[in-house]
Length: 277
Ligand SMILES: [Zn+2]
Image 1 (cartoon, rainbow, N blue to C red):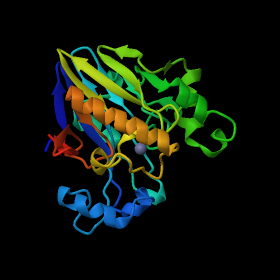
Image 2: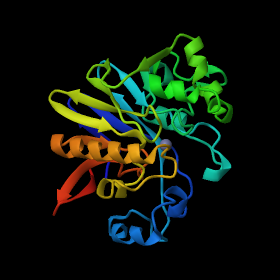
Image 3: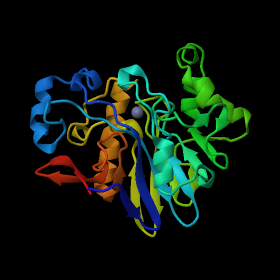
């Protein structure tokens, strides 16, 4: 059980923003029959009461050269549907020894509200010395007519960064910095991106919302209700899992339960399983 791992010279550290109360798994995976969860219960996919646990958090990538945050959590005020609490990212970052001014880059996997919640604070960038990286395709989607009108977090957490000149728009395969690369992983959102890390011959990936539950490493057809284009999300998930297994990547999936969201995918009798570090 760990909150951190090392990929060459890069430390990857999970920092939680908020954990909502456990809820009915069908709230998160509406198309998955409740019986389908049974074989996964021995792997702690649900808690002892049969409820699904999820974490809202981020990963910090730390080396001698940079401190990069992948996503910024759900933000200071958590919506009622997730328990209505308070995000603790800034406190937890400081407890991990990271000051906001030290962050050199913020990489957003996608522009859902639970991933950009601390991009800005009261109209100012929360990480004043960072450049912010969105996928060009996701930014285009979320700022398009019809979508923007129903996405009040975009004018507060995304668009001001463009006006401030702090925004970088990425495409599949772009080098971001120091061995970190964008990997286009569409489906959950149209321009969803994951991040590949390579350092001293070791490799890893931060998946973003290609994965919401450890069960999806075994059953990649399972889609979260929030996956916008489900057939594309399934194809992306399958391709990503093949790559994780064939390249033996160290994997970080932020929505998995804290202390078990960094690990590997192992193959046993032709089935894949999540194996936390
Ligand atoms: Zn999410």
